[in-house]
Image (cartoon, rainbow, N blue to C red; front, top):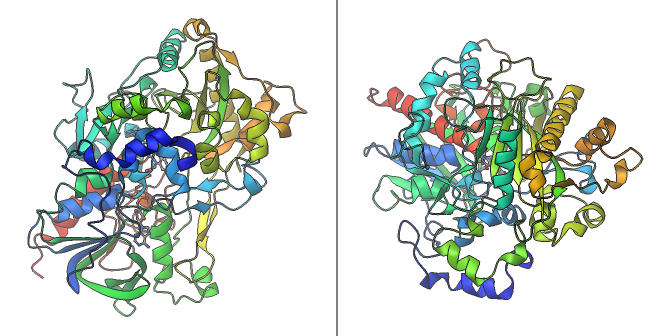
Length: 609
Ligand SMILES: Cc1cc2nc3c(=O)[nH]c(=O)nc-3n(C[C@H](O)[C@H](O)[C@H](O)COP(=O)(O)OP(=O)(O)OC[C@H]3O[C@@H](n4cnc5c(N)ncnc54)[C@H](O)[C@@H]3O)c2cc1C
């Protein structure tokens, strides 16, 4: 982390931050106020495991009811001031704020990555993955949710979930003050990114010249180009913790938040199949804590299924193999969908100082950031999204199948450190292809597939809760997924040829990938090779605890997110999403947390026990 961004001047300045301006809650820099805590009670009403977007919303909304005692257990630690700097998003993948998972090797993808294995980063922090993600706020297409209902998941139509998206949102978006699709008073800040490079302005203009409409992708239609909407507050990262926990932590005596507490198992009575608490490890000691009402797993797409399986809920043969007694047979961990992407194409331009470059970060940029603007407010480099429908899609015209994510740079922008390491791109590939771009203005698009036909799964290696699950994403098992990304690459090249982009001297960067060199650069076969080489996840894994009604053999939870066949146990996070949404996934997780809070309140507010 330090080798990348903090040349000595910046580092010294940031370490002096304790005398700089406080953040929105009057805090200064590092905080260990959560670490010191232990659960103060032996018994709570609700135990929430995991403090990502869904977990933090739940902790906030359930503790609104002052007679309910709520415990939030989080394996990671609180954020530091560095987490607040949007530009540094990629670097947290090399820190303890990332669980550090890696997917299993497969001959069909990630050819350009170390050991041909893709990184599977996941946040481990108070705030969960929202503390290390790229902060893009993006909700999805009405059809996503309407299809959940068509599959038997009552209550999840777009009309029914939109109020929950709005409930969270505190928008500060220029020109959208009167939009019915935005709320301005919710706790989760959503802003325009204050900094815009000349290159992104060219990309948006060029897209329009090539027939793409400029849209609000969180508004009425989702096909078109838009500058990014970000979860930031005055240019600083807005995480689930800063939006939903910090404002209430001192005022809600009925909410106990404990960090560095790793839950290892849900306690379930095997006879009654009723959850009654959890086992967790803190400071190398094992504890148990109990609940009267419910255990709620919000540990994310990888760890919620892991905890279910460790607790005896899963596929019988698998649990037998790892010596876990079965409590309830369910297809936990199957149905893992993701938004696989291609890193590129990349283009050079004739501008100077418009691409991101870590070396640009000097004291003036830090000062700008402290005042809420400047290049450090760029959300990990992402500046614009263009949601397109390719000719490969048989879906209606308003349902995009590809997203073009505009970045004014590449892995060369930080001299091959944070971003390359997050991707696990091999050093040889970096040296040969990207290093020559260091210091030259350039831009790239990440081409992301919204509705993959390929899907994967995860399973446990053994019954040790400290061992990683094994991830088998199976990207590109279905060749159609490669072909759709190829269409996205072609559309990017078309936009690069627009008058606005040509005015910037845009030229495709045609240094071939070493392993694709035998193919003619720019041909379809070259790009197919590139797609399987520069494959990278956009980290939107969903579906591992799939929601579906009773009778759906692929479902783990019902439409009220209760684990099928087990009492007093719910899963509330993006693992319940049955099919990948036409969006990035954090907004969906906030929405799921809001909706689940109301469902849980409806269950227990009338209940006398
Ligand atoms: C690098 C990266 C960039 C991304 N960028 C974006 C983006 O720009 N926009 C977007 O919309 N989405 C983005 N995403 C995805 C998005 O952040 C996640 O989908 C979202 O945070 C998921 O929320 P969640 O509530 O399901 O779980 P998470 O946010 O993953 O939170 C789960 C929490 O549970 C904790 N936990 C897990 N196991 C245990 C245990 N055993 N005991 C105690 N605690 C435990 C974890 O430490 C974590 O804090 C990105 C993801 C990554 C990895």
